[in-house]
Length: 402
Image (cartoon, rainbow, N blue to C red; front, side):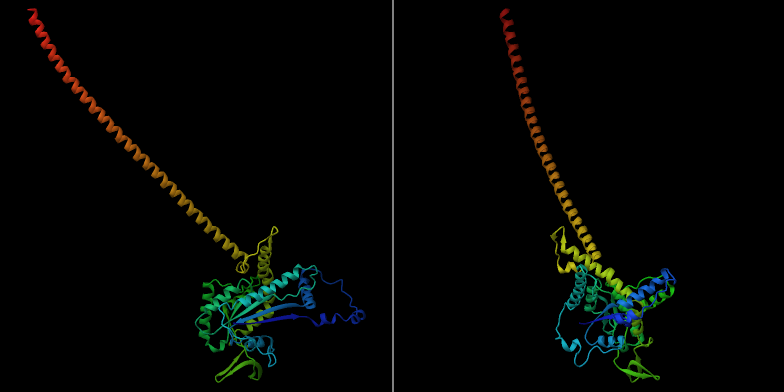
């Protein structure tokens, strides 16, 4: 994976010439105080402010080597990024095989956020260069077989930090039918893996909504780049000459280059900057400030935790809380089952003890009953014997008396 960073600052000639004090003192322009006053003039004020101060727009281009990243930037801004004296990164940087190829990109984006955060923390904040990455063009190889695992993992690592716009590189290597099928397959995989690409803003203007819907229907944009200017029907244009014809870079029937250019430069540049400032940078800022100190106590987190957005962190905390509650519920159920088992065992032991005592008492009663029966029998026998003896004595007495 290679990445290119393009940072552009725009200043007007009037803004550059404003330092000429002598010209300003001689040619004093009178303000028209009788002009229109109202909210309709606000866009003009914003325009004049932007023209005077200028603005920064940083574009990141990420993709495998040989997909035409430099060529597309050359076509986009009508310039040549590299020369024999300053070759491309493919010729300057030693190639390595890295599984975590996204880490340098993430580190770069975080470093620019960190620089801007430090600039905000200074006492003098009048000069705050904004080098934050507002947009990332992710190049996808025109394989026709969907996203590679590296593409999926790379975009999942980036989508919480920067506005990701997927592009199909070298679209002229595919037929229109293959390109449309490839686009549908890529979008299905993006939705399946919950990758958050740049979300175009909603608007009340029906024409703008139609344009946005047309752009969404063309995602991922299939682009062609060329460093060669050829003549087509008497007009000079960037394109690629083939035996069967010419693939023009700026022809909407051949590729989506013009849609990308209009979106980046004409229609959605400010929204890309706003989303970067209000969403991605605020997420980084809130994570960073929350990680520095909490009530004066160091609360530094791991790098993996710092790369998560607050929403993702809240979702993870919710899952952790639910898992903790489920674990506590299971532990309470286990304790309850254990106590129930102990109580049942005690009841069984008590029942067995009572049964044993009952059997013992029954045995004792039976023994006592037997003893009493034996004594009664003996008593009956003794009684019979005594009565017999008495009878004999009575008979003897009667005999003597006679």
